[in-house]
Image 1 (cartoon, rainbow, N blue to C red):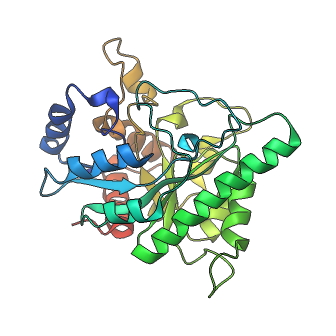
Image 2: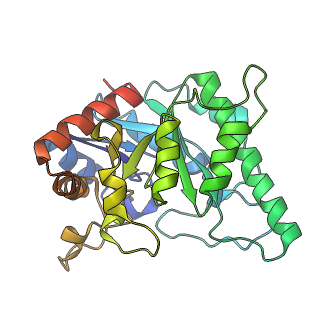
Length: 289
């Protein structure tokens, strides 16, 4: 059994054959969690999950890229759909999270890939993202749900926010929050900091890519198997072994097996062991039944 802990079958990319993809996964003993990135995709993830008794779950959250700060031009992703929000509607998302199939708040976090050029606008841009992140962390705490973190080019700021944000009255930091650093792309030092904070680390098809300054093999070696989650981030990031086929133009949850195989190779263990432990990890963090 495998669990794809980060899929987007709720995106437009799967509008035509979503049910067939899900049935194919379930027939192959693969469970999935569909991740919300704004209210619309969160709602759709919940609606999809309700159609299945087991194996299909949902999360709710506002991705930092979908936060319309008014400070950068937002690029529409046709695979996802156009659903930008100027603020985080706490009560609206809270109501959506009442479904028992909602297993986490996410994906939420910080993303500085597209950013303003002036210092003043950049500071305001970062503060707006941080404010929305903290609002969603409060929601996760109120609902007693784990968090799925997205972070791109902002690890230092995310760490500082988690450790020193003062929006909670009873503690200075978020170290008691459980969660996963989705699709981790960072340094070994940043990895160790997240592990020390108690987070799981998510790996997906990006581990097959070459990114300057990032050593995916070293990161995987230094992450205990008991702290690893596997994911696809489909429809994005087709794993290299699957991408060699010209017929494959879209990532799917079934391809998470290639991520598990690569982790097994790097850790000098078996695919079966990786499948067993990462499945246990996912069930434990997200309380899956």
